[in-house]
Length: 155
Image (cartoon, rainbow, N blue to C red; front, side, top):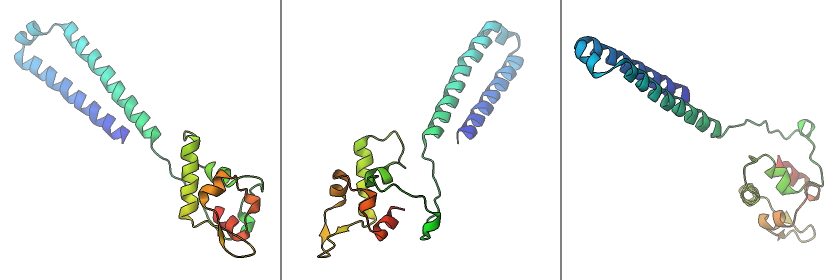
């Protein structure tokens, strides 16, 4: 995770600083001739932006990862929210998707979910299947036009 990587980066930086100090002590006067005090300040201020950038990148990446949600599904109709009869299937299903999806992406996901759930409309007189999920979404099929079993599938 981001915190673990940031901790590792800080520990690595601390080890590098200790190593530099040890080299300075071991080499003594020679190291002082090679590196003046302002060189150390330049090194410090060169490393800090890199560490801050890595931390910001890791925080941003963690924020963009998908969040999961657990939903209770029951056949008991008393604990279900009521969906307006005039709401289209695309809106009923699509409103739970992330807002950053385009209309076309949202629509294709709604169709894919309807297909995966085996959603099908039937002619009430003949019992024959009518249309496809693409047709239902394109034509704006409303929640109020569904049978009880089809409404249950929306949950």
